[in-house]
Image 1 (cartoon, rainbow, N blue to C red):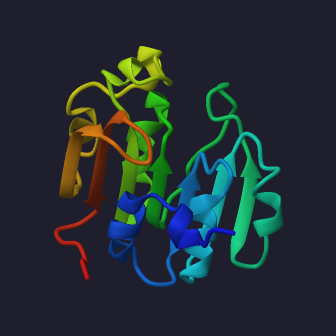
Image 2 (cartoon, rainbow, N blue to C red):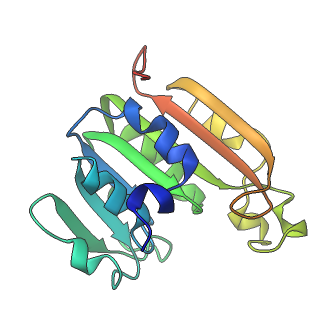
Length: 176
């Protein structure tokens, strides 16, 4: 069995120190829970949201709230606020992007990584609705302090064209 560190995105692992130790973190579109498990293992309080929570349900407990929401159907759901961190990987629903920055507490960090235009040559997703435009994450999170931003081709865990950002709501970030 893989540990939560082995399952996690290297991008998320790299920038996890930006999030206040023991803080409240939103794992948005949490999927199978690989980052929810990582966050719990590292001592964070986690709010995990996905449309299918079957894989997440066993993680529910005093430090982990699980919420079943189809983020793309127009259901009334608000991100809320006061998150010390928001983690999003392999997911894009543009109407949520502005709300992510507003949901961060002062000093809170967003760690975001997903597919970008050009990924269609590698496989799914191919639909432009699910592929970031060049520099799109920079534009969306321009009001935050950008710690780092990357876009381009990666070989692992599989060939893909991606875009990723780590940014903080405030003047500085904590890197260790």
